[in-house]
Length: 192
View 1 (cartoon, rainbow, N blue to C red):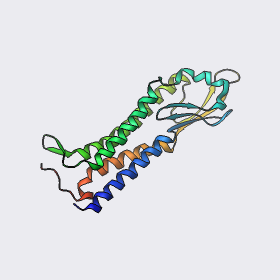
View 2: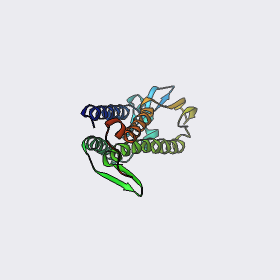
View 3: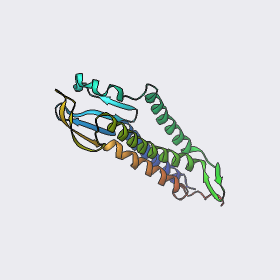
View 4: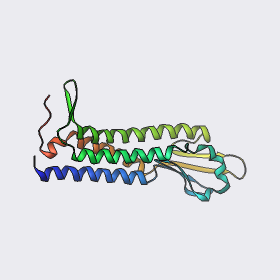
């Protein structure tokens, strides 16, 4: 096992963590309301963000906010993911196995972060889709005419944005790096 190869692996994991953080800070979904402007409502990993241009119309989505505990929970999730990645970069020699399948702790941590982030993206999309149907009968992605009575009559366009797609980039890169860890670092595989 070469020290340079270990550092290459670490740099790749840190780069994937950077993609994860960028996706975390960018909106995942946005709603453009023709009468009010673009990006009026956004879904971010920690909840709903409503632009001040929404003004009095914000009352139409007042019950759409996530519970108060949700944002701290999601930030704690991000923090735990970052801790798992750091531990995964430096832990050595610990192995776990289920039957004949064996995996190193670092692979489990890094791959687990990737898998959990992909699951978070899928759950967010499914949950948002259900909530949007309940509120305005708005599709998760698409264009629809909303008539909530004067003055809230407008075309609404909704779609995923870059932050959402980066979830899958980061998650898949973590999983691939976890699977290829031994090849990249030059470390021997666990005994089968």
